[in-house]
Length: 277
Image 1: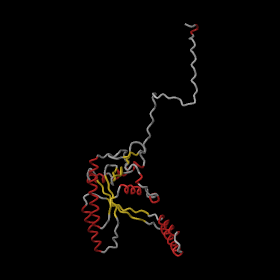
Image 2: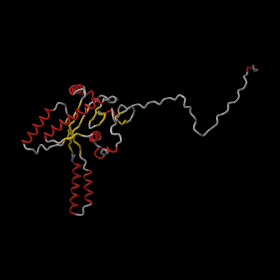
Image 3: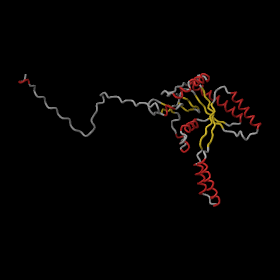
Image 4: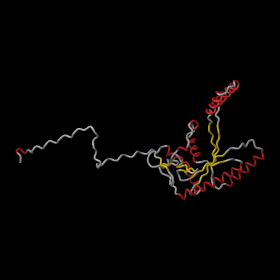
């Protein structure tokens, strides 16, 4: 034992060399997992009532289906009294022949006269006749003043055809009871799941209903056509973006690689869907 209760001096520890490169990290060491990014329950995607648009059908968030038919208007005021009675009688028979609910939508949209005026200006620049140039200037000024003083509206007519896998009558009762509750309730962050058999049955039933409605409208003299997947996308884009849709129309769908998308787990993640839901 050393004197004065002193332990022998320990050898000095060599200092670590100073390097300019990155400090090595032990890959086997336990690392703290990153915290997940909190979800935003008030995002625009969560507020939408639809889940997917595919095969000319709108799949709603509650698992029901919709098809939309665009109708061309007829001039009822210019018809004779006999023609009006025929249209009214045919319309009455059409409504009585329906065995499922439908929704008739009349949409009024302001017409943008800007592209038409730009076209007239370009035509006027290539016109050599002085008299025609003066007349075109007057006409362009008249159209410009008219578009500023009056709202020039365009009306579009649609018929929405629903299909409820659980039955039309039961779903109508549920919608009537909980209308205000569903209107102000926050949608749940869930993914709509539909099996293949239910989806195929819905496609067949939607097709039969669309054929029945188009045949009934043909008896009225109203031309109608079912909206395709692209046209449905443009319709929803115009509804949710009424101000920018006029000047910024939706792009061409042919350049899109993923035709169908659905909401996935996480924030702002789109997953292509090909064969199943």
